[in-house]
Length: 298
Length: 308
Picture 1 (cartoon, rainbow over the protein chains, first blue to last red):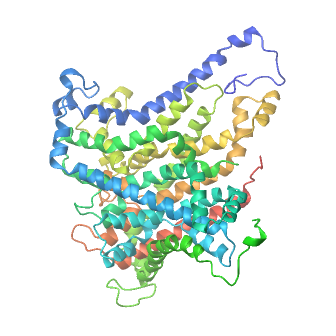
Picture 2: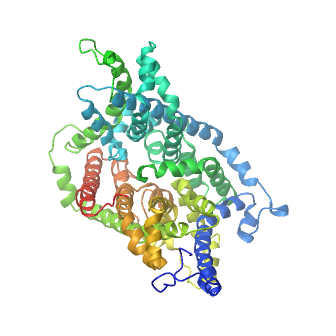
């Protein structure tokens, strides 16, 4: 029986007979489902496709033939030439990579250490420390921006990528501690105790546990990556200078200035989309699992 | 936790490794998050130059001064409208897409899911500009499509009367993937035997959804609502990229987030005001706290969560 039949059936089961299979609802309903999903999918991706497609055209073609693919005569990468000439886009890309990878590295390492310290041992104040670390899950760090800015100025870190790495690591830590603690508890204690009997130090025990959590670490990494890569707020406030500018901020400023050069505009947009989209298509399965991990019942 | 007797903690020996495991993260967290939050509270109680303790007078100004209150009130109203539009459009749409993706024997399910979620990956900067270009009269995409659909084209993003709903629709376009994923996961967790039993009893798909599946995923409706609430009351980026810090035209798209940014960072000729900025941040914080508590204390208690 089709689960999405919209036609209500009389109570009690009927034997499935040939006439039933010919009823319009048998094929009409799936068709309707595909029609709705298909049209919304088109709405979701068409704007992006339109931008990417037109980024490989000259200005004239963008306005006169926006719906044709950039093949043959229409192909003209003039926009990309402008972007590479006028901006330090590779430099911005490097900054974004450093900030994102640095933050993820710190989040995973410190998060795993803290989760281990909070779940592996019993001591007084453990409950309080766990609660203290998890309060951050509820509070948007942006609201503390004024004080963070003052702090970074005082530490002489303003306009450095370090200010961003520190803020993003902090922002991601409560989530990492929360998720990794759940996994740490599942590691059998026999394994750790066996290592201890063999004379392993607590640090060696920790490094024994970490590789066991590889799937959780990978999911977490992808999960915390996007808000960092895409953030505009903190680069704008803490590190607006040329030397520490991230790709997202660089794109924002370039796009604001080049309102009239549409080839360059669309090329910059495409260049800013590309890294995220490539990563997403590779990791979408893990990402989707990570985003919904909290809601799945065990 | 079971421990072997010989490994039981030795009270007399300090266990320094615990400190080594905990200290780096807790120090970082305390310095970059907890301290700035407390400092934000402190700054909001001082004068703008930070020299004098002024009690709650910054808050008083925000709520009574004609220099502040009308603008704060406008940003608050806009934010509430922004949030309500997400609640009535984004979340039901997410539920509809999830329910359709949950249909039995659907072909191409994972392709749909991947593509439907892809706008959520993009940064606000990209999304803001893409829609600015598409909706602009210059390129002619929106006018052509409106013509085709028989709608009269207006520069929706640029008109005072339609700019806020338009920004909200763009935000919904970007984020509908999140409620969709949450609802999808919840629907997957509905046990097959319950559904089979309802089908045997002759329930139609419509009845099956509203009488069986929907009550079972009600807890997820709560989670999605509170996430939408927190997200919207922090929203800043999309308005900033699509409309600039001035949230034009004539501040019609000003949200609490952009109001907060302009206040502490300054704009045009006005200098940034840390005291008022932190006061606004604290008010936003209290609103979010109040909403979260309402959710935890009222919704979570009232809504029956079925153990499956």
